[in-house]
Amino acid sequence: MRKVVMACLLGFAALQGVMVTSQALAQGQQQQGGKGKGKGAPSRPTPQVARCPDLGVGTTAFVTEVPGQAPLGPNEIAVTWQVRNDGNTPFVTGNVADTSVALEYTTAAGPTRIAIAPAITTLDADGHVSLAYAHAVRGVVRGVVPPEAMGRRLRLRLVYASEGTRRGIPDCNEANNVAPLPPRPPATPVSAPAPSGR
Image 1 (cartoon, rainbow, N blue to C red):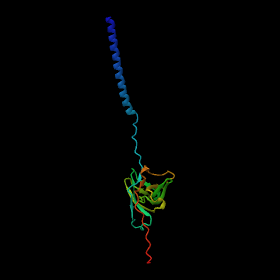
Image 2 (cartoon, rainbow, N blue to C red; image 1 turned 90 degrees about the horizontal axis):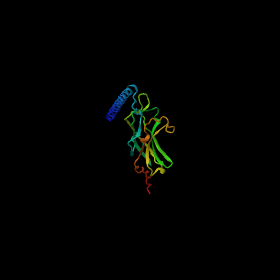
Image 3 (cartoon, rainbow, N blue to C red; image 1 turned 135 degrees about the horizontal axis):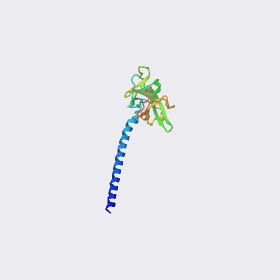
Image 4 (cartoon, rainbow, N blue to C red; image 1 turned 90 degrees about the vertical axis):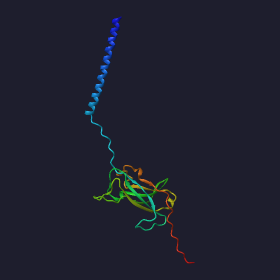
């Protein structure tokens, strides 16, 4: 009986030794495999942030007169605006007409344009229309509000000449291309006729 107990103890000790040894070997292989992977396999590049301009319509305000222009007429309004480049690269295009600010109102049928003005007229050294990133330009758009637009909310919208084709619009984020206007002030009154003297 003593021999059987001794044989069992020796067998158990041998089995424990084999298990400890195999675990140590497995851990060593994992560590070596991890080191080898780090040296042999190329590391994944960190994702690059897209480099593109992001034009948006910023600060807006109704004005009662535009310096250097004729006085506002009946039912005519003028709105100043700011277009800024919130992207991380300059906006560059070949033509002033490529980017405009439109004064619109919307109905169930869609937007209706009242007036439009060029958004960016600044030219760079090469003669291209340009707006550096983190820069802004200011402008004004004026137009006569038609009777069907009375009581409707107006908005300013950045418009690209290539909008219908969806090609060549250099804008990372078009979500900031619309600026709803607050309720407009009363329309410019029509001049009263001169008294006839009777």
